[in-house]
View 1: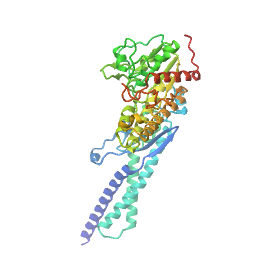
View 2 (view 1 turned 60 degrees about the horizontal axis):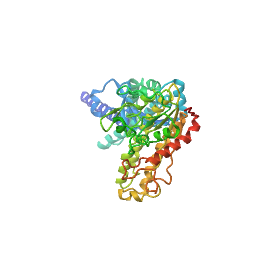
View 3 (view 1 turned 30 degrees about the vertical axis):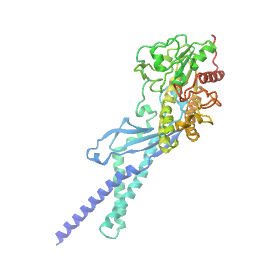
View 4 (view 1 turned 60 degrees about the vertical axis):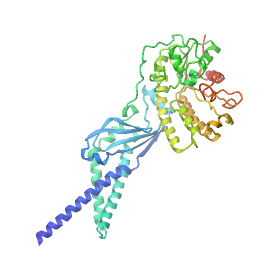
Length: 468
């Protein structure tokens, strides 16, 4: 009988140990998924740090090392860094602002990369995350053990529950120490986004393209700068037609009014990555070389004007969807816009860094965007546009302009803000192309001239002087 009693107690102990181990594993797995990521912020940059736990189905085949995860404004990218153990860090970059502090660091270190001013805080956030994760493991373990007692209809043995919680916490802490002890050191070494996932290098021209050696002003940008929908330049090339470059663009107005040699590289639908820093595939199948690659050859230029951002944020599509929707300020479209704006901010930072590093140091002027909507929208009512919808669109345009202005200010570049007040859509004398024109919402000839005048008014603040 004594032997049977011992065997029975051994079976009970083994079953209890197995149950505790199963509860502990499940508690750790759940905790890794519900523990909130820890927030770090500095100089307008906000990130969250936590663990990228593997799915339960992959537990039997866990690898001993591998990349972490970076959620870059909604896009999940594996890190370049390799981390030891199955529990690896997940970083979410929620916001990136271009501030004077970030720019001063960039200039001091001579880098072209997005500096993470909170890099020293990443390791401590990782450790703080596991403090909370361990507390949550304790909670899940206690609930699991109490549930077992409830199923077996027995009174809860609180000493056993406390002991089980302690064991689960020891397993959790031991696992973290053994498998992720090197992670804080690696996170402390992070200085830039390039350290984490790399950055897209500036692409070389698709084919050798030479800039005019006598260009005094270079214009880079999108359809607003190219003059989309207006008459083409004289003797247009296939590239001019594909980009929509017009003789009535503000670049042409500046050249005519001042006798300047202005090189207009702007191209319709250009974004920073696909047009300015990278090559752009046009609607007619042509490939336009990166605008910046051509601009950096214009070493005699005293001024570079940049008009970019609307296509990065898919402004045209967003406007059409807004007109067709019941409302334009819903949470889904708002979240999508925020994601696009954050991604644009990172690309804009890279563009400004490249411009800042040009060896002959031309003045740089960034054009903000005009509002196309006024107080009267009668001419747009049949398209579904209302004042409330227009206000929502203008609010998002203001957010883009804020990023453009803050970034330019951080690099000590100039900013021009065209105002079409009294000349918006549906006004008697609009500066904007209407629904029946070739390029709705784009500037017409008068609007392009208004932008040119705004640019000229901004030049004294940049100390730009032309001799001829």
